[in-house]
Length: 177
Image (cartoon, rainbow, N blue to C red; front, side):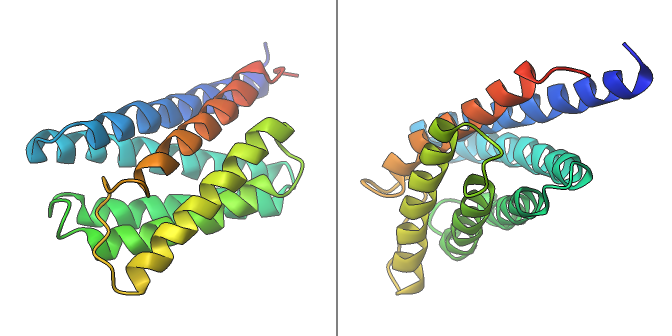
């Protein structure tokens, strides 16, 4: 394996690791009721996703897939906005959460519309995008929608995590050449 092939493989593995951390710790934070554990889990989740999105932005830009690249950039910004409110607790984080999920919805749509990923991955991404857009609209309309509220956003997270799993799958099966 040449240096370039090894570099691409390393990028894919690092991005996949960040996405996996985001999926696992994001769900773990949603499932716990202890505020300290929730903040730590969501902090790890956010840092992993921001790292993954930064790497994937560069990867897809270099490949000439600017719309997908832009989608990962927007998603990463959204995750950073969400991270900014995490330490404040679920109730106090609602404004940053609303702004962040609006950016998630936008980023997911940009990533999922082009034919970069398999149709099943794109479909889960589009559904997640729609559910997070509804969540953001409710918050912007003045509702106090917590990050753990049910039915939304609670039931949107599995669609997001399946989308992450699809991205991971695509990254890890990519041939090095």
